[in-house]
Image (cartoon, rainbow, N blue to C red; front, top):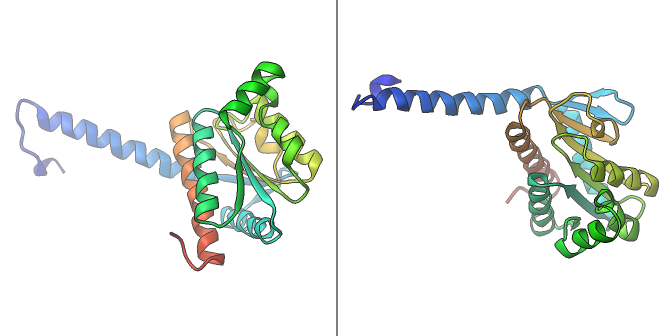
Length: 212
């Protein structure tokens, strides 16, 4: 590898360090995805491929019955939630709703509680047989837990994406739970985005004639 670069004032050493760092980071993401743990509502382990297929098939049932997929997350997870809600609607032909609309979350936060920002609209809009996709790197966000509790009460299908600590709360609460054993938020978030795109692309491949 070093033979590809000329040494100028130590630049080759710096380049090698940077390249090793990049490769190491990508290896860490790859390893976290390889070690992905999927489980059911009772904590039973599900094979990775089976877990993804269950998610895809449940999505088809929701979509075929004209129901809604809700996406919830905080911070970077909110950005992923908004992104995938848009892609699901535009590319997947689904009804979807992003639960972090600015006016609503600030009003609920100010007037009620930040823990209720996702549960509140779910109480207003969600029906039995809709789906909630809850994204939380820590798996311990109070508003995500409340959203899942509300979704459970209303009979929604629940898919969770979590990471970091293996004993996080959220990974015990969904019908299908994807836990990424990454050590940092960056790694977990990269893996969550990959999983979300995998879900949508595989859904398009299986039921819509191919991904976009």
